[in-house]
Image (cartoon, rainbow, N blue to C red; front, side):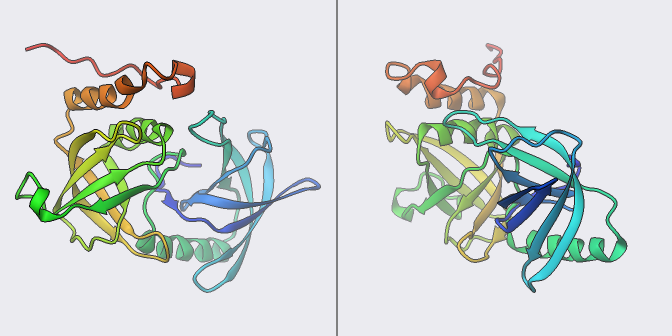
Length: 252
């Protein structure tokens, strides 16, 4: 799948045919170039497959040939295995149908920053306990597990962006306070983000945020916040091996 294409999170039933094998799956994200989905069935790279999807919002039938271009391994507690497909040799009418579908998705669904997908829930914090008057709203971010917190740190926060599921009606450009709640200690780490886009479609409503003021030093402190409280209880294998060492911080 072409890296230059923006990917959008949407779950749509998907049929993949590989020889005599028929896999009934669901997309995890889509782009103008192809689709990504979770599967434990190995798909050899560069293999051609047939793909069938019924495209919302008009239930249009879509059938195309695609090539397996990307595999994601299973990581215990962090992500399931998956594969990415890039469309191959599709005609102009079929391409037009797909591009129309992706345009619809772009308006209603969040961008997917990376393959490991978590959904972060933002709980509205009452104004009386806010610490910064510049924040239009404050959201307490609750994650289901330490694994989700680690994934958010590795994926979204290193890219300085985050999608938060919330019913708060913030406007584009507003500054939002973010309280990251540790899933085990309930300690809070404060961040802030600016609204880039508001998403509303079915059960997946929320805010796409670009994070502000998240320096390498602050990111290193957040990594300490994530791991340190759990070291007496878990080893590195249970926490998930860190994808990269903490950013080096120069002493001043």
